[in-house]
Amino acid sequence: MKLAYWMYAGPAHIGTLRIASSFKNVHAIMHAPLGDDYFNVMRSMLERDRNFTPVTASIVDRHVLARGSREKVINNISRKDKEENPDLIILTPTCTSSILQEDLNNFVKRASLESTADVLLADVNHYRINELQASDRTLEQIISFYLEKAAKDNSIQLEKSTKPSVNILGMVSLGFHNQHDLIELKRFCHDLDIEINQIVPEDSYVNNLKLLPRAWFNLIPYRETGLMAAKYLEKKFDMPYVDVVPIGLSNIKSCIKKIEDVLKTYKLNRNYTSYLEAQTKYISQAAWFSRSIDCQNLIGKTAIVFGDTTHASAITKILHENMGIHVLWSGTYCTHDAQWFQEEVKGYSDQVIITDDHQLVADLIAKTEPNAIFGTQMERHIGKRLNIPCGVISSPVHIQNFPLSYKPFVGYEGTNQIADLIYNSFTLGMEDHLLDLFGGHDTTQIITNTLSATNELTWSTEAKQELTKIPGFIRGKVKRNTERFARDNNYDHIDLQIMYEAKEKISG
Image (tube, rainbow, N blue to C red; front, side, top):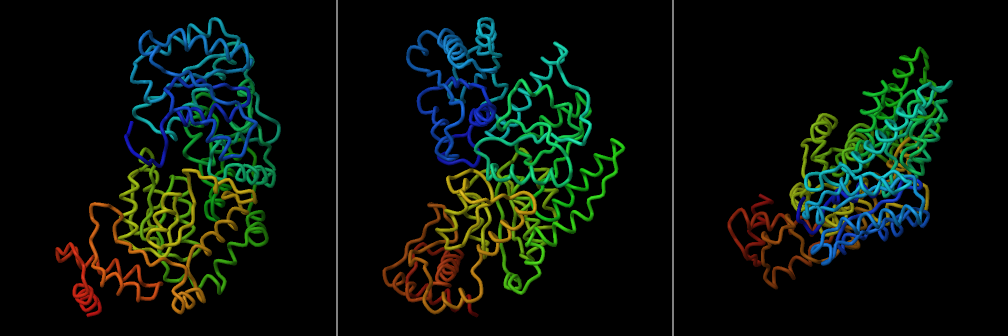
C-alpha cells in the first residue's frame, strides 16, 4: 500500500474488478468505504460501454465499524445472487477496508451455502501488490477454481482440438488499446490457420473455462495479465504458452517462430516464412517507411521510453532497430517485473530505469532533454511542461486511449500505427525552420531542468524579459542551461549578469 496523489498502477482491488467485469455474468462485490466505489463510472466513461455487469459496493460505514460487517456482506451476496442470477460472485476488499482485519473468507463460505452462484474471495494481498499484479492473480484464481471444479465432476475437456488452436489470455477491460488489439490478434490467428479456442476473460463465461485444455497452446499478448494463468495451465495440463509480445516487426517474427516450435511438439510442421515476407512487404508499411528518405530526418534524434513492461520494451526495440533513434533511457513502472525488462531492453538503450515514482521520471526527462518522449499520460503532461513532444504508448489509460478509429498496437497493422506515432512525435524538417522563424506554438512560460518544487529558482523581472526575446524553439534549452549553471555555482536567484555569465561559460 502506498500513499500518493498519483500512481502509475492503481490499488489491487481495481485489478480484481477489471477481471470480474471482463467476464460475462460475473458479479463483483467490493467491501469498501465511500470514495473507493468509482470503478463503474471509470469503466463506463473510458470504454464508452454500458453492456457490463456493474460492481456492487458493500459500504463500510459507522454501523459496520460498530457491529462488524458479516451480516451486511452476506446479505449483499445473497441479494445479488437472487437479483442477477450470476455464475460467479467475487468479493474483494480494498486496502482501506482491509485495515479492519475481518475474516472475509468465513463470510464467503457462509454465503456460498445459501447462494446458487459460486462465491469467491479475491486471493490478493491489498497491502503489497498493485492493480496489475492483482489482475494477474485474480485471473489465475478464477481459472484454477473452475478447472478444478470441472475435474471433480468429470466435465473438463482434455481432448485436444482437431486443428491447431489457441487460448488468448489476458484481454481485459480498461486495457491500453485492447479492443483494437483483439481484432488484430483474431486476424493474426486466422492468417496462421490457428483456431481460437477461448478468449479470456474478455466477454467469456466462467462455465466455459473447462474448455481451456482443448487448445494446443496459450498466447499471452501482455505480460501484465495472463502470465500466471498460463504458467498454471502449463504446470497442471502440460500446455505450452507463447509470451513473446507481437508488437513490432522483430517481435512478431519471434512470436511466429515460437508458435512454429510449439506446433512441432504436436508433430505438425508449419513454415510461415512466406507469410512473414508477404506481410512485411504488402501489409506493414513500417518496414519500407523506416528505410525511406522521410525517416532520414530521424537520424541523430534522441528519445526516452517509459511505460508498462509490455509496451515500453517493444517500443524501445522499434525505436532502436527500425527507426534508428538513439534511446537515452528506457524504463518501466512494473517494478515486480524488473528482471525481465532489464534483459529485454539490454543493448537497446543507454540506461534502464525501474521506478514507480513519477517525479523521478519527470526529473530524468528534464535532465536528459530528449527530442521526444514515448510514455504514459503522465509523461505527456511532463512533456507539455518541458515543451518536449510525447507519444502515448502505455497505460495508465485515459479517454484518448479508447479512440473511435482503428488503432491497434499489436500485429502488422499495429506496426503502421506505431510508425506514424513515432514519426509524428518529432519536430522535423520544415517544422524546425518555421519554429526558428515564428517561435512556433510554444509558451514563454519559464521551465526548469527539474520539475521538483524544492529545486525552483527565482528569476528577476529583467532576466525573464530577456528570456522571452530568445526564439521559442531554443528558449527552453537556454533556460535549463542557465538554471543548471546557477545551481552548479550555488546561486538561488538569476539576474541578467548571471544569464550572461552562463552564456559565456556554456558558449566557451
